[in-house]
Amino acid sequence: MKKLVQLNVNGDTHELAVNPDETLLGVLRNHLDLIGPKRGCDSGGCGCCTVHVDGKAVYSCMMYAVSAQDKNVVTIEGLGQNNDQGNGNGRELDPLQQAFIDAGAVQCGYCTCGVIMAAKELLDTVKNPDEDEIRHAIAGNLCRCTGYQKIVDAIKLAAAAV
Ligand code: FES
Ligand code: FES
Image 1 (cartoon, rainbow, N blue to C red):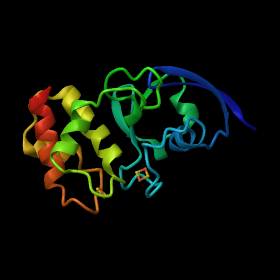
Image 2: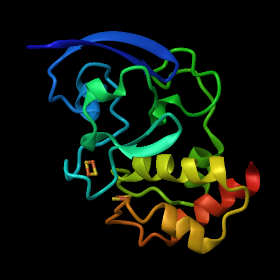
Image 3: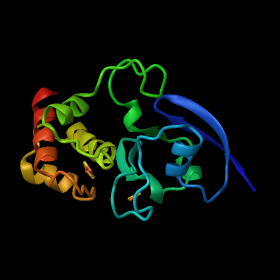
Image 4: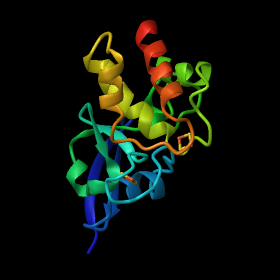
């Protein structure tokens, strides 16, 4: 039987009827059209579904949507300024997003939203992270394309800009 859940996502409140076993990832993508978080392994191994829940980076494939009740969820679509529509339209990029572009850290892009959300938690808590801290912060995010160095460069660039 479906359960009614109230989710606060990117500053907007949504009341949704969800199955008790629906993941937060599934609800974000399938009910709210927030497709930044990607479905990769669906088992906590790749990090491409990473979002923030109450400021912490979490794998949204590993969390039931009902567990997000009364918590603040932020997806990649919620980063940046002027995000008044909650869907990424009409906003300025977050410095991390801009740095990923500037450093050439995006190739196929499948991992990118998750990596940025993991890096965002780091930059929200550590002012000038060193390379070890950056690599540790994104250790749970797999990228098949970049070899990671440009991702690390991008995070350094963003850290210098904030
Ligand atoms: S899809 Fe969630 S960790 Fe891989
Ligand atoms: S850019 Fe392709 S998986 Fe990371």
